[in-house]
Image (cartoon, rainbow, N blue to C red; front, side, top):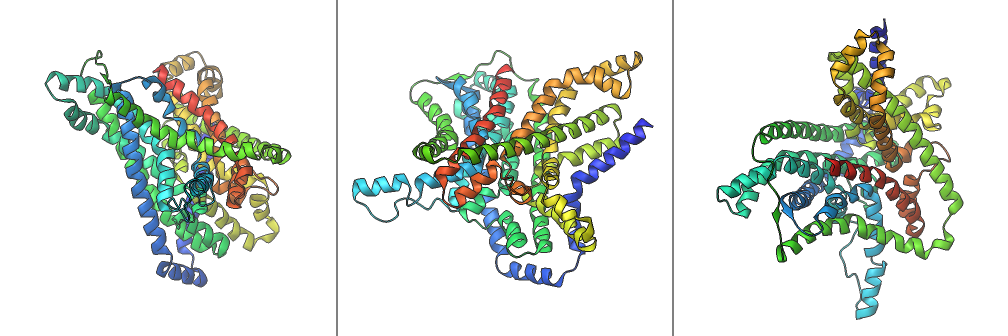
Length: 535
């Protein structure tokens, strides 16, 4: 009986977490002459621009994060130089910076009326624009590269740490020079990790709304919001969203393929080399070059944006809206806390059922839940509101639109679709460290079902559960696209207010909520760096 109840619960969870994707697919079976006409006009006018800009942005960011991430991972893994221990964890700091905060910081400092260009004109008697326009596709590539390279750095560093030093030592003993060892040993070994990291970075790039909207870049995400909010064409927005979802699905396939190759290479690499292999010691100019390779990404992705935001914050300290800031913080903490508790509870349920009753159904639902994190916030919004509008038009007395858009129901639902995967990954990692023999022993002593979860699993999963809740909490705090559309009335969050103030060129007021988001984002980065040092 308990197993049938668990199966029914799993099916309900699967429907809840996949409804946005299912509704987007169903949009192609609906015929709307006006929507078809809008899509036809977009295909002849702006859609090619969306596709071309998205392609250029994606390719440029892929090259940027691959180069920066691989260079920094190679420097701290294969070589030993002064400051190496500091850079090992400091290179993770840009993970704490939302990309849209980095964009606001650089724009405020480098734009035509910013302090740098004003100082250059006054000091050297120059006139006109002295620096390239920040709000452009190259500017977005810069922002995304130095915000997202830690994805590649983290995976490449793990891959190189596990096997590259031993194999490079073997190559050295065979007479291979340093350049050849890096080119023919280290880089091929790290290639699957780099591919997986690039795929993750591109998912974040495609999901972005804050940078694209603020810079005025015509990407698919910006086009989805225009079709929905500006043109009031939800069906056209849904069909645009399916195109973006197709790109995300391709990236997910590439990431999973790279991860499989990475695991295969790791198993082979563990049988090679000697445990006594040590990184190559660098001195002089080579050591300075390694410091520059590691220091510049930290400066561009974290230190400079923080300093750029501190300047207007300190300058306008007396005029800061502290009362409103406390309200924004309360709204953010409440929504993030609610989302974290519910997402962790769902993830615990899924992980427990998969553990106790492994099978195609449980594994399939778990995989469906894991897909949510790759779905952009704009796609989730359209996927949720499309069926809501359909139900509201046929049964207006049900007030479905009110409950989804005017209360916390809609936004929390979007958070669960997007971030349950984050909690599930942490809890599945925790379960992987619990041997199955403990379950067998507990069953022999009479513990079954919920008793097994409460007496055996829960004491061993407390840290994983806390980590899952923390990660979801931080992700919800920083989430912008879904929150911007689905938040309840008079419930502005720190992320939404940061975007709105920056859009209105009130960057001095935007600095306070923006830096608060950075401080919150530092918590999981610190925990991650501690976990890496403990390995």
